[in-house]
Length: 72
Image (cartoon, rainbow, N blue to C red; front, side, top):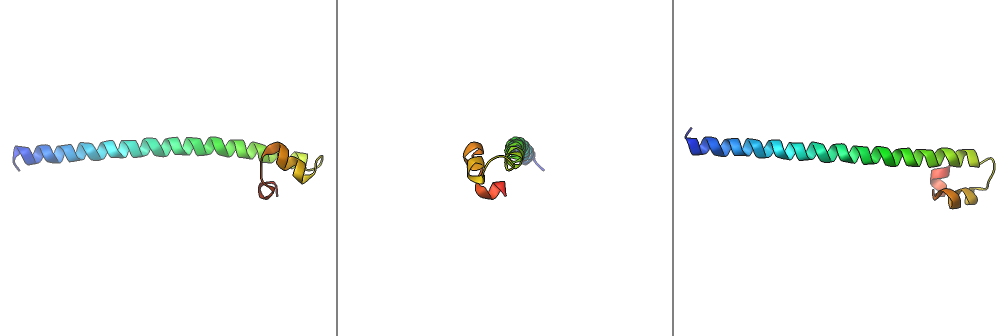
């Protein structure tokens, strides 16, 4: 293999490594965002469940911003 071909091959390997690094970064960031959103939704649902004994479903929807489906 000549030097030019080897350099091209090495560049492609580095490009692939860089793309995988970006992919891993975005995946990790997406997972973190999803985890935080899940915690927030879970907390709202837990509060809504406790409120079911004290308020009507319509009042809970209004206060929490959850839909009726998320409250059931």
